[in-house]
Image (cartoon, rainbow, N blue to C red; front, side, top):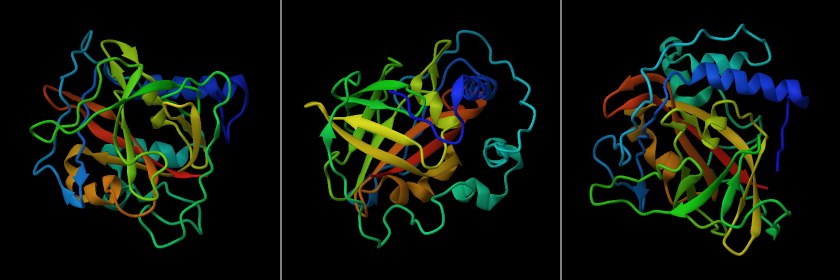
Length: 264
């Protein structure tokens, strides 16, 4: 299932894929995620997901694409070294005027499950460009580390259920692994208003609309953990992956991409 907005046709998808390839500088990734349990930050320092990525070859920087005008906001967000402090906190891309951040006081959206369309398997998430990952329920490990499957076709699911009235359903996946790009790489060129669909194990579909797009340095996550991953406030879907500058070692990529989607 492929749903797009803002850009249509084959050429639009090709442009987005070219941008994605240009932005991902390495062949492996590790993901740092600060999670919240009961409103309290579960980790005292940035956590690295179990399993350090091993690049298939040394990462080689790739030239940035020519400015497009239509993607100016996204380019400013992705060029991490040039962002201003307030932009690094994810305020450059957010819900259109009239919307609120997750956890706000507005009435929660009426989420009406419907029968899953043919083609989407039960227990999967489908991203706007059609990338699909099988959801695997995971809990925090002994050191409060959230494991992410090495299989690019899988994503960790932590937190609230899809039919929960509140709290974040957190889906985390690698951006790439051993030279292959995963479906969660789409998070680097997703747009506000695009749709994400999730099916539970029974095949019931839940639809979400992207409302916030946030890029953070991994060391910035502790200050935003309650806001992003907390189990209070409006129910929301929180998709997380890595990207940006490749640092190597146990850190991997320098940044996390966090995409928040609200029920529709």
